[in-house]
Length: 315
Image (cartoon, rainbow, N blue to C red; front, side, top):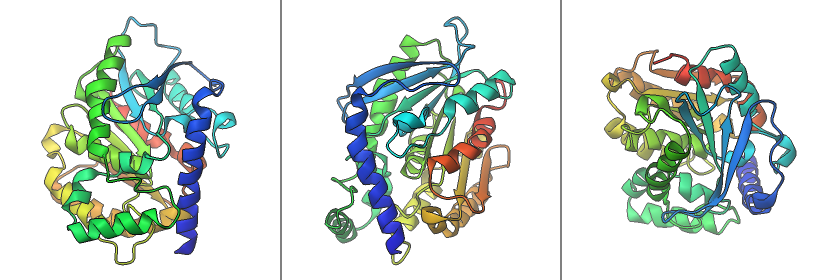
């Protein structure tokens, strides 16, 4: 398990360092579309951060477009300006899907993570607070002391979601020509970003119509051994998962290498919850990618699958 601790600690450390360094970096070079950056977008709920809005070539401000919100926004478009020289390739993938008319017209809102507070922004708060106080204290103390940039404080994802719902979304809907209804509003992320995407859908089902959760980090920390966190997530899902009749869509996936090797046992439990809730294959998809690791390169290769699943039907 030591290699998983080293991997994610390094990932979070570099994210923290480069989130600050990238505040004044050159704009990403795009394969398609254009990018509008709203630098240091302020919030009364969370740290200020950059917002990058990708507009496809088809967007002219006259026809209303759906909106896909994506976490870790600094890694979406151009590997030349990211800390690890990897990217999601959102402009290529979404641009190609739009060009081939495989998805409904959409724009993409890339929400930068805040660096040091990424983990507490993205960690679902209600499941954490459902743990008994002694467990909460142990997690906070032990993980702060090992040098990893996690649990810089208590989870504040409820505040992060308020930022998205009450500040960012109204701003986006006022500046751009959008379709603001839930059935045209989607959210996506990977790892901790997968967790917060799931949480956003469950907490605000009238705002988000679908969520894509890639390499969802169900352990919450770096080990499965004697870890009570996944069970807290499962209990939360059983209680707050929107009813299938609401027509929400949920996508999950996982690889089998590096950090993703921790996920299969947990995703199987989540899949059982989805089946028991009555979700059909039109509303829910889980995919395994054998040999895939925990990286932007891996997510780039399969990004078209969740995008088509969420936005593939014109409504």
